[in-house]
Amino acid sequence: MKIPFPYVIIIELLCLLSSLYYLNNKAGWWKYFKFFLALTVVVETSAYCIFAYYQKSNHWIHNLFLPIDALFSAWLFLKIYNNYFNSKPWLLLGLTIFLAIYFFTSISNNFLEYSTTGSEFISVFFAVSSCLYYYYLLKQDDYIDLIKHPPFWIITGLFFFYFGRTGCNFFADYLFDINKIYGIPLRYIIFIVLNFILYGCWSYGFICKYRQTISS
Image 1 (cartoon, rainbow, N blue to C red):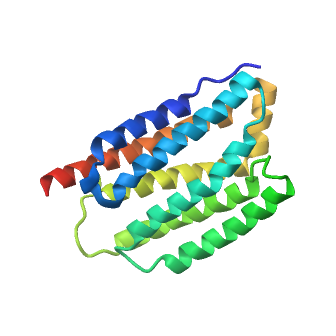
Image 2 (image 1 turned 135 degrees about the vertical axis):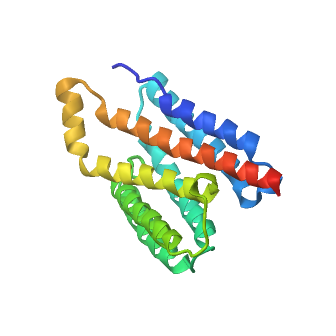
C-alpha cells in the first residue's frame, strides 16, 4: 500500500515555527498556541510513523487527541467571545454533549477506534460557533480592520476547517467510493487543503498579533 506524503505535518510544523517566532511572552494567552501546535505535531508524527513504518492502525492516537483538540478550540472561542457576550453556557453545553458522545463511543471499543460520531458533532458545533462570532462581530458599532484583526483570522481558520470537515463526514461514503473506484484519495486531498487554510489563517493571525504587540 502506498503511504501518502505527510503534507499535513509539514503544514503544522510551519505554523508551529510561525508561533515560536511571532508569539512571545507579551502576546498574553496567545502564547499557548505554541504548546498546542507542538503537541499536534508530535501526535500527527507519531500517528504517521505507526501507520507508515509499523503498518498498524493509528486510530487510537487520533482518538485520544480528539478531546484535547476540542477543548483547545473551545478555549479559543471562550477567549475571543469574551469581548462580545458570556459564552460559557453555550460552550459548556456543546462540550458536555461532545464528551458524552466521545466517551460512550470510545468505551464501547476500548478507545481503539476513532470516535467518528463525536468528531461529527464537534465539527458542526464549532462551525455554528464560528458563525455566531461573525454575527456578533457584524453587530459591533466600532470600526474593525479585519485584515489586521488577529481573532478574525483565528476564527476564520476554524470555520473553514470545521465546516469542511463536516462536509467530509457527511459525504464520507462517497469519498471512499471515489478512492476505491478511481484511486483518487479525494478525502485526503481535501484535508490537506483544509489544514492549509486553518494553519495559514492562524499563521497570519500570529503576524497580526505580533504587529499589535510591537506597536504597543
